[in-house]
Structures are given as C-alpha cells and as structure tokens.
Amino acid sequence: MSENRYDVIILGTGPGGITAALYGQRLGLNTVVFGDIPGGSVYMIENIMNYPGFIGGVPGAQFGTMAFQQAQSEGANFTLSRLESLSSSDGLFKGIDANKTEYLAPSAIVATGRVPKRLAVPNAHVKGVHFCSICDGPLYRGKNSTLAVVGNENAAAQHALALSRIADTVMLLCPGDSLQMDTAHINQIEKQSNIDVHLNTEVTGYKGLDIIDGIVIKPQGAEEKEVPVDGLFLAVGWRPNVGMLDIQVEKTAEGYLKTDEKLMTSFPGLFAAGDVRDTDMWQVLTACADGARAAKYVSEFLE
Ligand SMILES: Cc1cc2nc3c(=O)[nH]c(=O)nc-3n(C[C@H](O)[C@H](O)[C@H](O)COP(=O)(O)OP(=O)(O)OC[C@H]3O[C@@H](n4cnc5c(N)ncnc54)[C@H](O)[C@@H]3O)c2cc1C
Image (cartoon, rainbow, N blue to C red; front, side):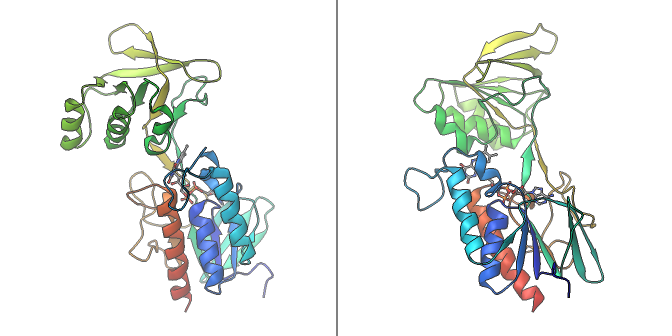
C-alpha cells in the first residue's frame, strides 16, 4: 500500500476542514488535510464575537491556531499546502499537490470555503472594505458613522438593515434600476429612515490612503462625485473555491456544492462542509458543525 494512502482526504484548513479532521481522527479515520493558513478565513477575523464560549470574543488567528493544534494533537496530518486537483478513479480519490505528489483515499471532504467578489477599482484591497455585516458592523457602533452598502439582492438588504441599527446613515448603492430582493426586505428598508437607497448607481473608486474615507459614485446620467463614508460593505457576490475539483458534481447556479442530508455530494464518497456547500448560513459555527457531521458520515460511508 502507498504511504500516501489515507481514509479521507480533507481539503481546507478553515473551521470546516479542521473540525472534520478532529472528528475524523477521533472516529478512528486516518486523515490528511490540505490548505495553507491554519484557520482559513478566520485568520481575517479580528475578533470572533459570536462563537459560544468566548466572552469578549476570540481573535480569529488564535482560534484558528488552537483548532489546528487540537486536530494535530489528535493525529491529523496537515500538509499546509493546497491541492492542485482532486480526481477519482477505481473507487479512490486522488489528490495532487503543487509538488505533484499523489495522495489517495476512498473518501474526501471538500471544505475549501469561498472568496468574496471585490469591485474592480484600483485600490480594491484598502482597509474599511468589508464583506460581513454580522462580523464587522459592530466595529462602527457608537461612532456616528456613515456606511455604504453595495448590492441589490437579499445579502445587501441584510447588510443595510443590520448596519442601520449601528450607523447614523446607511447608503444602499444599487447598480441596477430596482431592488432584486424579497418584498419583506424592501418593506423593512422603506421603513428605516436612515437607509438612503440610490438606484442605478455604480461605485467607481475608493478614497483614502490606508483606510477608506470616501467613495466615488457614478449615478446613471450624472457626473461622478465623491461621498465621504466610514466603511463600505460589499454584497456583490461570492465565489466558492471549487476550481480544483476534476469530478463532475451537482452545483448551484453560483457554483456551491449541493449535498444530501448527510453532506454527501452527488458523487459517492465526496462530501462537502462549510462555506463551499449550498447552505443558508456562512459562519464559523456552522462550518464547524458541517465538518463534524461530514466526518461522521464519511465514517459511516466507509463502513
Ligand atoms: C472578513 C470576514 C469576517 C468574518 N467574520 C466572522 C465572524 O465574526 N463570525 C463568524 O462566525 N463568521 C465570520 N466570517 C465567516 C467565516 O470566516 C466563515 O464562515 C468560515 O471561515 C467558513 O469556514 P470554512 O472552513 O467553510 O472555509 P474557510 O474558513 O474559508 O477555509 C477554506 C480553506 O480552504 C482552503 N483551500 C482553498 N482552496 C484549496 C485547495 N485547492 N486545496 C486545499 N485547500 C484549499 C483555504 O486555504 C482555507 O484553509 C467572516 C468571514 C470574513 C471573510
């Protein structure tokens, strides 16, 4: 048997992948885990305030490192590199890393998360541009802020409504000529006196050196103008990380992996967990729960 043969190949070192490894090891599975940063996206969270058990929050980097070490202490094998491809033949999954090393297993869990889409502006990565109002909105509490939200779908509505309870003013900037969101959201937005909706308006630039302090907007048929803002929340879409999959599986129109109630994709033995999955909540807690359940169902599958 090859030395690179495992019970399960896990893709992702975020909360989903690490928890899958932790539970997998404790269920007696021999796991190998691919991914670069211990903790995945949690590394970007200054302070996780909504994970039970941590009064006052826990820095994302600390949470990720501790979870990583915990899974490692249970015997999970971390490569700290990404997989270039995952394919399947003869009942075995084959992962190939950047060194062209092959790893084999009869099951795999994809927990590769998703990346937010940014606007195509020159300084797109400036500080003060956010993607999660639940997570980062509270940074602006009590600061008499003006915040901007870009998007015109339900995610943008949720950002605008959540932020309207925190900021003095919320500008909802929609590129289209109508709000493409649930009627309930539209009604709530109309009732909220501090949300200003700007239809047919594009954001064409960010102002500020290190931290955003304004945006350039271009209303249709009008000149560009600068508007001061304290923060910007983007809801212009996400991209699930599935490019490494050389396996045909069912996905949503946006590319999220569809799973059954046991988190198995349409391809037998291939499971998905966390943000890459077709889910309704993209959070640390739900990714951890998915990881634990995926490991349990992998164990059942292998039996
Ligand atoms: C800025 C920000 C703030 C947030 N704040 C909060 C918060 O306060 N509270 C909260 O609950 N949630 C928050 N979230 C959401 C939370 O981070 C995610 O829901 C959670 O990390 C999802 O976990 P995951 O394991 O599914 O994916 P991720 O954490 O995104 O991890 C994905 C992993 O996949 C790996 N990967 C990608 N491609 C490959 C490949 N080809 N091969 C191998 N590995 C690969 C990556 O290296 C990474 O390790 C925030 C997200 C962001 C972006």
